[in-house]
Image (cartoon, rainbow, N blue to C red; front, side, top):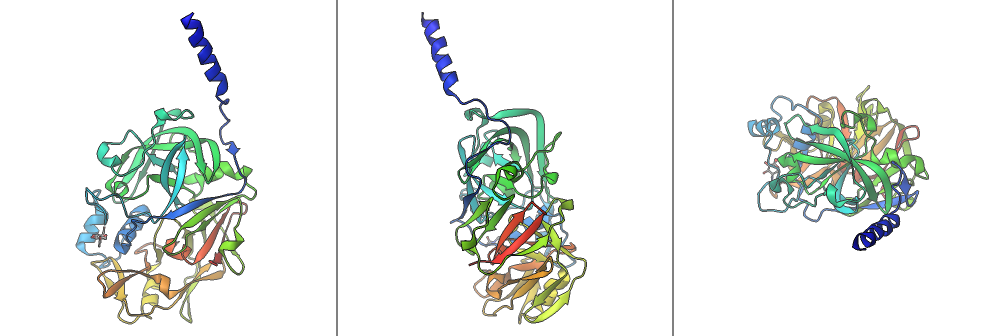
Length: 404
Ligand SMILES: *[C@@H]1O[C@H](CO)[C@@H](O)[C@H](O)[C@H]1NC(C)=O
């Protein structure tokens, strides 16, 4: 009798559960917005932001650009970020966090248009690594399915990185869910990530640079794309304030004037476009054959070395500081605007946004810095502080319009 009852109870429970949804199905709105909350603990540290970008893109500083201390930091897997102290809550690194549900578990993730992995802090991490983070526990999710034998790994040039195992689960962003999304569970993270406020990343570059083996996986955006009203998302990251990521639509209340579009070459997996010249104040400089990428996962604007020296030649008292790894200037100096060519149209970043941070009350660190020996410009959050950016997979193309 008892066993009949429990079988019955089981049958009722089972029939009450929805049938498993097919992979990549979108449940919810075909146009939705996810708040990108400004991290209230965020402390600006231009040097740390620069080191992070150098590690991510394997950039090498030019002779004399970095002090031996910074060179060591870049070469070490134990780089301590500004918030690396053991007791402090993770504060730095990521300025905008997007609340994301994975299998019903809530995490604060870094939306990164410069990578293509969706990875999360998981219960398999050591307790020291988990400290201060929300974590994903696969066994608590009714919709998790392991991808047996699958692995992922992100390794940066400085030895930092993250890696682990892979499964699929329902990922909900801004009230809309994608079923069967590849979720990469970190079982190892370096100190750089431990000290960062984010509980993982949502990569929004092209799926061609996803690191899952043996079978590469699609990004959240690529899975959602066929169901969206328009095959695009947009980044809204205003200075020191809450922003948003809009999926499937362009929010005309967030920008003024018209949108300019640049053709994207996705060959390297990035939102990459021609960037053949720039203007400092009123002067135009050519950098023919150059490209730039739009990367919400990088804090600063990084340009080829010539452009950066030409810019700071117009800033009185500016010098490259090996101690800070980049250009600093007296905080009292007002900076010229910088216009960057994005596929044939200029985007103008006002000088005020290029004053990234006061380092000692007297000197300030620039929001524009060099890619060292690199050859590709990286337009990060300092750019997005001035422009609403549209990542449109249809051509593909990158659109930009001045923030309202
Ligand atoms: C900023 O970051 C650098 C590099 O990680 C670090 O050496 C420095 O102490 C940090 N500055 C502050 C004020 O936290």
